[in-house]
Image (cartoon, rainbow, N blue to C red; front, side, top):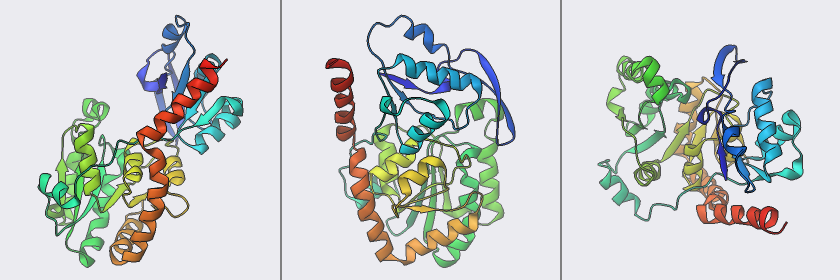
Length: 313
């Protein structure tokens, strides 16, 4: 079972342009040193599927697919891209959702108490490795309009700074977030939990959210573990319309706002706080979809692939 992400496997570097920015990143082709020495069948899960790929990454992805018994993606959109942009046969690709841990088996009041959170507040939560792509600054900019209507709203920014950002820029982005919050006089409504959390505690913070947010800046992002966890735990979610969010939050399962638009974030947060019926309708749709992402369901889907494409042949 190969879990593939370009940055994990090093190898030759290649330059490519994405949204006007020149990148010089490894192509991940060192993985073939391992694959060359395997005799067992390979099932590959692709965590990043780049649309309109540069030639180097396209070649690596196609070769992984050729060596694999099956290729797994986490969204229908990624499957479509693999067929259209990589010319990989549709019958070699199966979509299995991002797995989600079991829901926290505690009442919300006990979760809030355990995390030291006031049960009278309404919590907006962002989790994951913090970097400019997360768009945390956009939510902070939305807070004045939110707090003007709902002064009990609090924003929790949960997670350490992304290691690559920390190595190149230190804590400059986090410091800028604190500066924005102070300038807008909303710093009392923002809490930073600057540490890496094990899955169990991360799930508690996500379960504490009244609204979960992923205002990411990359429209091509094809997966988000944190958004998957939020959807899998029936959290009302507001997101920018990157590829993965469009699929998870489509069909009225969540709320999509334009990129770089704090006003739209504020409007949607206020709307959700004010409209209890909308919250309840959305949660019911989330539960139906999110239950399919539970690890026992996802595990059975992987076992079926092994049985159908590895054992039976």
